Length: 123
View (cartoon, helix red, strand yellow):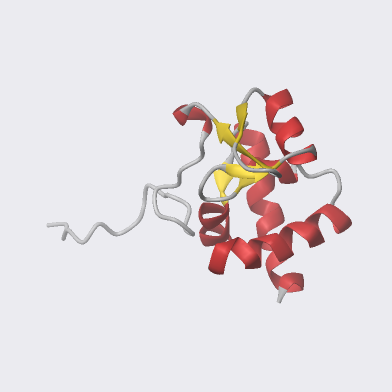
């Protein structure tokens, strides 16, 4: 499944890069049209594929739903970008990001458009 999901996640990561924001695994997966899975496992599989096949993408813009990342490269990339990190567990750090730097979408998985039907009838 990762081979079909990874291109969709890659598109979302490109969107995050253009917006200069980060997003949670669940938000990224929902935007890409699937569930992040238990403890983000589906996203972790996609991220491995993305890092292998599209190394130029800023994979580090996707973080676990609890805003923790693995100590090391992921934390370092986020710090370079401007996030703050605090050691949490032996191999994990908590990431603090300003609210305006966290991507939210109108409706997860669907881009917002001005011409969506709002249920009202025109007369």
